[in-house]
Length: 330
Picture 1 (cartoon, rainbow, N blue to C red):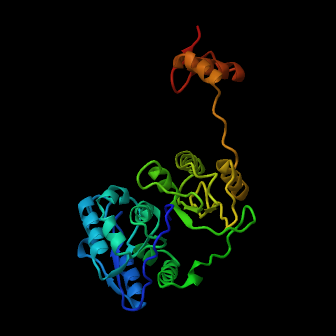
Picture 2 (cartoon, helix red, strand yellow):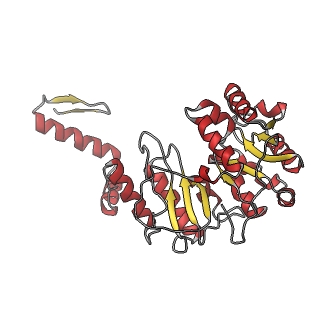
Picture 3 (cartoon, rainbow, N blue to C red):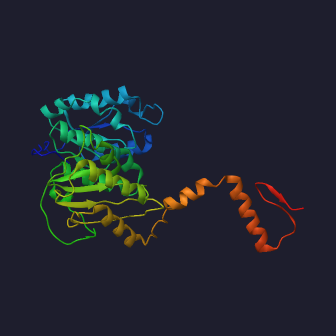
């Protein structure tokens, strides 16, 4: 995920290294967190986290000051070799400006997460100039089916194993090959950070996006915002999209290294989504003339008109009652 300058790679993890876990966003399940932390320890690492990581302030894992101080402590700790996150959710944007990115630049270490952590990962690359890792989180991995397997792949990647980068079963929208740095993150966060100091720099990059529980219209809106604010669609090498799950939009477009960036990326994504999900096109909104005509008619007149129309069509009795008013004829 990165800027124009070449990003530094943090040192690879080795047996016995100290891995810190922070909670910069939403609160999480304690049992699932301990399960994920024990899995990391069983792999041969020392695991550290603060006792107040289980605190709550509304939906957050503690107030902003606590979460910022926790993350700054791990960034400045010379023994820590990697910082993993407990959970995403929401809250990283509230503390991004409080974090010591210069300390991270002086002493690079791996930082991993996804979803709401996209804001912090963008800051890692934009402010500290260090490559970030888009991967699973500790509490989420301890709770979801297959989560520990994904956490194992992340640890293998942090150890320097290139086999962990292989992705199979992806669907290509356009065949082709490309070699370029990878940049991206959560689609909603990429749209929200556009125009800020943490905005994604995607020129000459392979863009990847992930999203969850978002209907098609929100995906379309976010893509349009990213396209408009980043001005990077024409200069990006390729676009790669992850899965988006919800009742209105189950697993959406899965592309491999070959989904070329189109001059009309929104239309490309929308067509692909409809083709995969066989969604119906949304109904068109009433035109301006119909809207003006409806606005000129008072509500009571519209109710009376509908009531009279129903009476003529059914041949009802001379007295009739509706849910809104009663109309009588002498």
